[in-house]
Length: 147
Image (cartoon, rainbow, N blue to C red; front, side, top):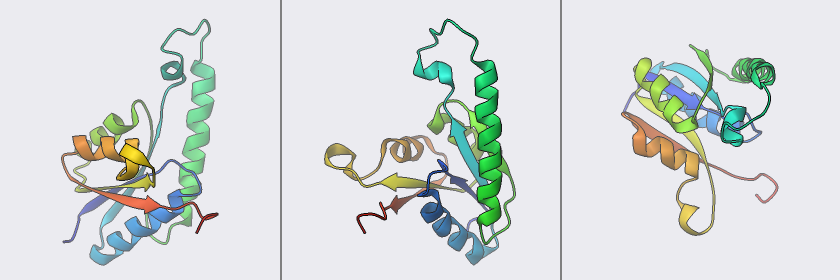
């Protein structure tokens, strides 16, 4: 199956390269558009909105830093990137929103190996899978120290 537009969701950790490798490989097979997304959960989420100070300046710095890191990450890929998205909000819903907005037909996301109930997918990958209106590929990422 050939996809027209792949959305690669990355958390910008070292493991993002493993996920990107799979997305780029798929994109090359069909000369597919590739876009990147990184979602920042707003600081107010961490504190339940009950923060006695204005966090907007700090949030803006986090956004700018993430934009630079995502741009740098995109430049390391062996493939041309169509669009870069740094968005704030709940990770799964923002990935779904951008995928729908841009007519994405495949979302690629990393999944950590877990124990117990989360063995199949990590919580983010599971959330993306269950609300997506397109195909989702969860790429198993491994901790390089244990491999």
